[in-house]
Length: 130
Image: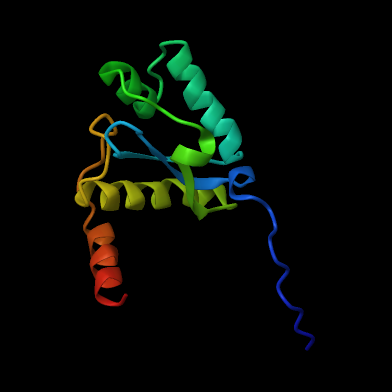
């Protein structure tokens, strides 16, 4: 059996898909999102909503409703979890929304679903073993 070394992924984070976090520059709270495209395209979509006064995303609603400041992609958007398998986007997003909400760092405009006991168990386990 031949074992090949894993190839390094030299793709920049903003050119990847997955779960991301957008930060409000005014209140420092976060929005958790998902994209199967790349982060740059998703960022541009959020900014387009803001510039067109179109609250289609909770992040745009947060900025528009409160007249808060948003920033440049490199300053406010972070790839939390790169994901290529689109079937995993929603579960990871929900887990990270619940975690961010529990920490008190989620923008109020982003509704989190009902408390998921499985996610609570995962986060409790991770806190104990880190």
